[in-house]
Image (tube, rainbow, N blue to C red; front, side, top):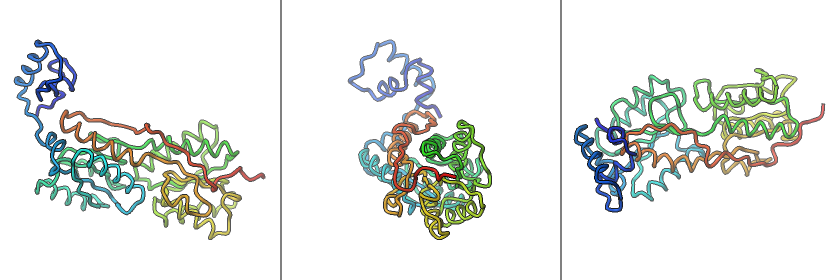
Length: 338
């Protein structure tokens, strides 16, 4: 199927010029020869306009589907808020569903397609899904934008600056004199977990500090996972003076377990969370966190989906604007002496 980008390449003009000519934009000022060249290229390539994309822009009856492993997650709720508010601005409806495994996601996506309930899909793939599993999941479906998921597929995707978030947390701890730093990460199969661990390794290496693997866990992102991970690390007599927890939910569990073990935060051990959500300011002590642009990612995903539908362009974006932001609270302090 010919896409807008193919016509633009054939006519040697920008995609926006092609779109405005084919949509007979009266405000466009362009040479007659350029207009003729675009129309000739469109005819030769048998270009057919994407009426679904146009309907998405103009009709309240049009909808996009949003699929996530866990919509009860406070992080995803912020992403969803961005999706919903941007969709509302563009007169779109949003269908939201939960699928924490490839099988359940596949079934829901097939129903969406077969019943014609949505014109495009925004998908946060379940942790642990393989590249092959993801390709099977989206085979033959509607235009899709991946969010906060794998970044090695052929699909359009937008991800956080995961490595940069961990490096920002490290810089804060370095400034407080910490050198013995642990990392509580996501599952080994988690794409976000892999990117955040890579940021930890590169940040420590840049400071010429060794990564002590006894202070690294790759268990998961739940509160229970956080409890297990911090217990494992603090079980060593020579434990770190600070830990970075790669997810806010796990950070809450880790903080609770540190108290259970009779240690003090931050006097005995400092703690930084990746992601800042509402309860980070309601714990004791309040948790120092790296705030990531969840809401903005959701808004951008809508624009990317519409652009892909109209132009066929596949985009791969690491969201750095707005940048990650360090929010310093009481869970971090200077490294203990000795």
